[in-house]
Length: 164
Image (tube, rainbow, N blue to C red; front, side):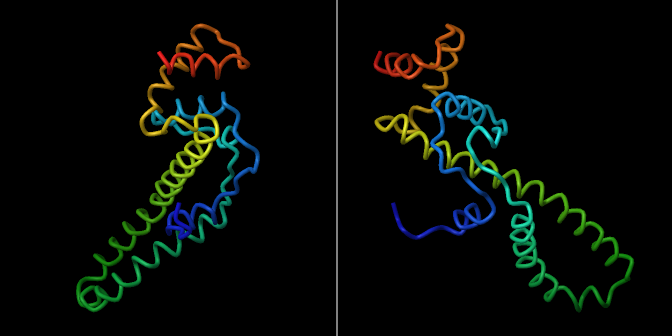
């Protein structure tokens, strides 16, 4: 793995605190199931927490990096036209900015969730790639829950069913 961090990885490391504790197998399987179904995974299950102040700071910097150049380009034309249009535009942009933070936070949460699931996947299933086996193990886990397999025998049950 490359030592260079992408901007997204740097942002995730900055705005989230992650636990050093390994994720338990059952928590990984439940988180994987919820993630595959498009649901938000409970942060405590994967051991991460959002630093809200830092998330606001990053979001403000991202918004400003887009708005400042646009403002510089559109200032003169907007100064000439009717001020009512500028006021309406400012209201719409303000609404988009506030709504956008929820999308930003949701996207970052999904990103950290997937990263932590993949990281834990390597620990529990080192010989099975996440991309290839994620859905299959999800189905096996669903069957294990129906068959009421206890936690102690869960890993063996999954590995036995994968080898079939």
